[in-house]
Length: 198
Image (tube, rainbow, N blue to C red; front, side, top):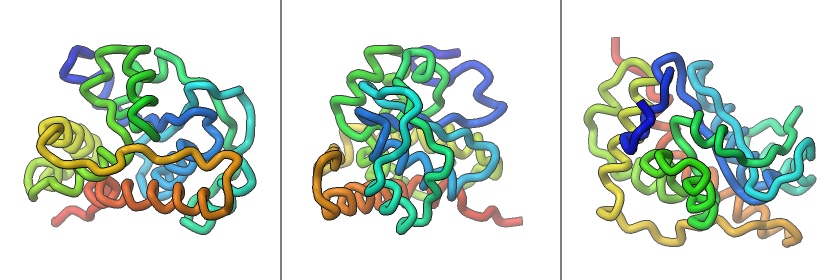
């Protein structure tokens, strides 16, 4: 079912995470490749841009920042965001609130499973020990994490939910963006990759 509960058809076979920014050249590919480096084969991680041109590489500065953070930019190609991509994703994480609005406008039922990267990181960090941690299956744990994060919306203060676009900016701007992405992803990736007790 793909209603406002946010579970897409066939979700039990894997878990799809979609990162979104504007050009799909810096922020969303950085997040994509950091998540890919941490997550197992049950997860399909991709990215797209609301105004992306297809087939472009990450910017040089974004690639270098990503490598310093432990990600691999090899083989990346940009692509535009579509309603089909949003509908197929189990979790949509965007660079800014504006990107979230654009993604949800393409597929309204995805509102329940669409967050900014920073927002989802903050909500994941506030989760008590419970269902997400208790789930031995990684896909079920991911769905439980999204459900609990959704339940905390409006209850957890999220300062500066947007990650600024570093395009055309200094090295410092790229490093700040990369660091904010890595910090925001730390809590959810910790939940999704934690070892399970035998």
